[in-house]
Amino acid sequence: MAHQLKLPREESKNNRIYNQATRQPIKEKSFLLEAGQGKNVNGNIFALLDYIRQDSRFDDYEIRLALLGEKKEEWELKAQKYGIENIIITEFGSPDYLRALGISKYLITDNSFPAYFYKKPEQVYLNTWHGTPIKALGRRDIANAISLANVQANMAKADYLLYPNRFTKDIMMSDYMIERVFKHKTVIIDYPRNDALYRKRFADEIRERYGLEGKRAIAYMPTWRGAGRDIDAKEQVEREEAVIRDIAGALSEDEVLFVNLHFLIGNQIDFSKFTNVYGFPAEYETYDFLAVCDTLITDYSSVAIDFAGTGKVIILYIYDYEQYRQDKKFYIEPSELPFPKAYTLEELRDRLDEKGTPYDLGEMFRSRAQGCAAEKVIALICSGHEAGLEIEDYAERGEYADIAYFENINREESRELIEELMVKKQSAAATAAASAQALSSAEPSLIMFQNALRPETIEYLKEIGEKVDYIRISGHLYCSNFELKLLRLFRKFGIFRRAADKIYRREGMRQIGQFGFAEFKTVQCGNRDRLEIISRLKD
Image (cartoon, rainbow, N blue to C red; front, top):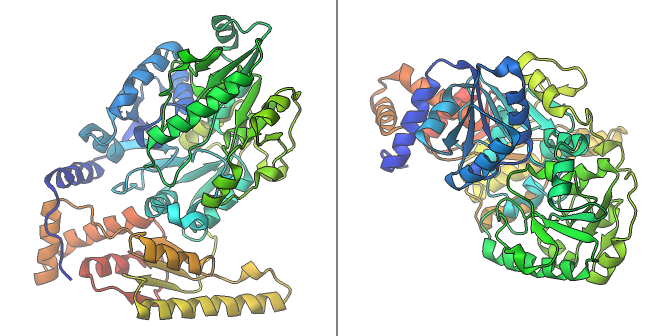
C-alpha cells in the first residue's frame, strides 16, 4: 500500500506546531476551555470560566478560551457584563491554540477536541458533554454519527467524563461503546450551566429592562434540526421564523416571547417585525437569562430536562413530530416525558394557561449539587475533592472476549470473521440466559476499523447493531512532513527506531487514549504504519 509522504503545507505546519508543543513542559497554572469547538460562548464552559475567574486562588493562572473569530464580539459583551478579566482569547485552530492545547495543565470542553489532540499524562482533561440525550446518538444513530471516531477518542482520553444524571452516563458509555475502553472516572453532578437557574443573578435587571412587571416572560428554545452539523442554516432560520410568527400571534398582551435559536444557527432573525418578541440578548449567558423566564417552550431539546428543576411551566411544542421521528430515533419518546405537549398552535395556546409544578423525572434523571456544580467540578479536577459527587472508576471495568482490527470491514473475508465474533457473543449470551443471568452479561467482542462512514459501511454497522462493539480509527497520521520521511526511512532501512517508536506510540495514544489492549484475535491490515501502531496498543 502506498504511503502518503507529504501533507498539505498548512496541515503539516499545524501538526508540527502542535507536536512540538506536546514535547514542552506542562504549564502548571493554566487552563484551556472550549465550547462547541469554538462555535459557542454559553453553557458549561462559560459557567466554569466565570467561576474560575471569581476564585482568587486562580488569580495567577493563565486562562485561555478558544473561539472562532465571529464569536469574539459576543464574548466581549459577556465579559464586560460579568466583569470577567484577564482571559486570553485564542483563535480556534490557530498556532496559539495549538500550543495551548499542547502545554495547558487543565483542558475542558463540552464536545471534543480536534482529531490531532494527544493528551499528555500530566494534563487533566474534563469533558462535560452538552446535554441529556433525548435523541439517539452513536451507534443508535450511526447514519448521522459523522464524528464517531473523534468523539470515541476524546471520551477514551478524558480523565473525567461529566454527566448530569445516570441516564446520560449510561447512554453515552454504551452507545459510544467505550465502557471497556475508558479507564478513568465518570462524574454525575448537575451541569455547571444549571447553577444560573437557581441563583437568578440578573433577574431584577432583566425584568426592569424589558418591563416585565406583571407580565409573563416566555422562552422559546428549539433544538437543532438536521443530520450532522452541516445542514443549511438558512433553511432552519426560515422554518423557525414561521414558527415564531405563529407563536407571536397566539400571545396575549401581557406575554412577552424571548427566542434563543441553536448556537449553530445563531439569532439571525429580525425580531423587530414582531410585537413583544425579542432575541436572547448576547451579553447574558443563556441560562442566566432563561432563569428570569416563567415558561419554557421547546421541542426535543435537553433544555427541558435542565429547566425541570425550577418547577416552572415547560411545554413541548412538537408540531412536526411525525415528520421528525422519521429522521430521528428517540431514547425517550416525548409522550413519556411529564411535560405538557402541544401538536398544534391551538393546543399551544391552551397549554400556556398551565400552572408551574415540580416535574418528577425519576431517579435516572436526578442531578446533584444544584446551584454549586461549577465550584465542585473545579475542586475535583484541581484538587481531587470528590465530596458530594457520584464518582465511578472504570479502571477495572472488564475486558473484551475478543478484539479484532480490520482495515476494511466491507471486504468479504472481514465480514466472515466479524460474523464469527457475533455468533460467539450470541452463544455466550444464550448460556448466560440459561443460567438465569442477564443476556447482556456475556462479554462482548470489539472490532476496530478504518473505513470512513460511507453508505455501504453505515448499512453494515446498522446490521451489526449491538452484536459487537466497534471503534472507528482514523487512517490519518498526524505527523509533520519531517516525521513522515523519518518513518519512511524506518520502514525501508530499520533506522531511527527509537524516534519511530515514539511517533507510533503517540499516534496510538492520540486515537484511543491510554487503554492497553489484550491480544488481537485478528488483524487485517496491509499498512505498515498502522501495523506498527497496533502492535503498540497491546503494551
